[in-house]
Image (cartoon, rainbow, N blue to C red; front, side):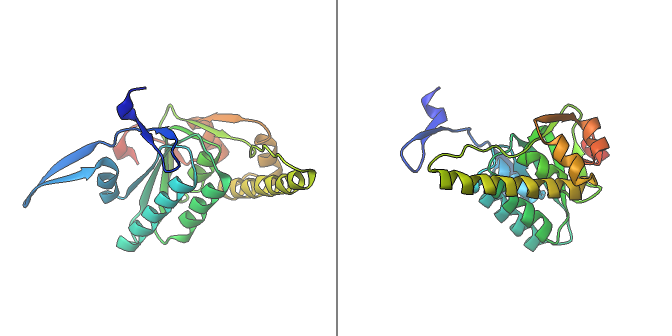
Length: 212
């Protein structure tokens, strides 16, 4: 990989770095520069385009609170293209989505898998969307417990708790029974936009921005 696409992280390892485009707008006072995500934030757009981890969750949560404080009566638009990730970090995002006064509309572009699918389903009722070629995937949490037997037992109990909690959330937002959700998330379960509408994860498939 080219050197300009790799940067050291805070603990001395290297991680892939995707350049952040800068956009320039003309104003009455001259030119104003924004990184692309700050510019989208002006339109109340929040973008989840990576794996969910604590850092990503904290940044996204901060944006949700900022947009609520700027105008609690206007919708926040959460665009999702994510393979999922940390369940606890994702649940932090989920709780804040329910906590803020603003309606959070959700949009799937590309992939909303695992925790990404849960966040997609957690949008305001009637305001959950997907582009036509997006894929949505639900499944149970993944575990990889190691250590002493007692530690493995503790971790196994936590995974089972999170599995039940995620199923409860999906049941709440899709209208499906717990038994149905438990069955459907037992293995990786991929859905098209049309199937996700039938299941209750989204409300509408859109092809053009004005159709929302």
